[in-house]
Length: 172
Image (cartoon, rainbow, N blue to C red; front, side, top):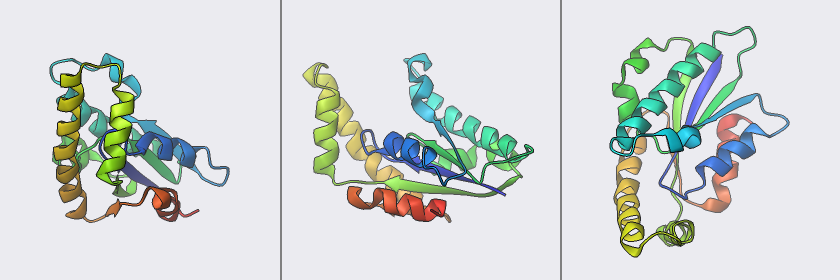
C-alpha cells in the first residue's frame, strides 16, 4: 500500500532539498511532488488559499497513484502545508486507498532559517524581507503546533539529522 508523507516547514527549512534527495535515492520506491512547483502561477492575492488547495490536490493525486497497477510505496509532498487545512478539506474524506498520511516538520534553528531567508531575499526591498521573516517566524509556531498535535506527525529540529529522520520514515 502507498503512504503519503508531507514534508512541511517554513521557507528555507530544507523541504524541497530533502524531498528531491529521497526521490532520487536508488533504493526508494518514492514519487515526489512539490507544492511550490507551480508557484509562479499562484494568485497574488489569495496565495495562502492556493497553498491549501494545492496540498489537498496532491492528497487526491497520491490517492489516485495508490490505485494504479504499480503504486509507489511512498509519495512525498514537500512545501508549506498545514495539517489541519488538509484534514479539513473534502479531499481528506474522499481518500481511501492510502495506507497512511503523515507529516514531517523540518524545524531548523531560527538563526539558520533567518540567514537563509536573508540570502534568498537579498534583492528584495528591506520592508519585504522584514515582512517575510516576521511571517515565517509566526508560521513556525503554527506549523509545529499542528504537526505535534496529530497522529503521524513528526518534528525534526536538527538539520544534520533531517535526512536520517526522513530515511527512517521512508524505511531506507
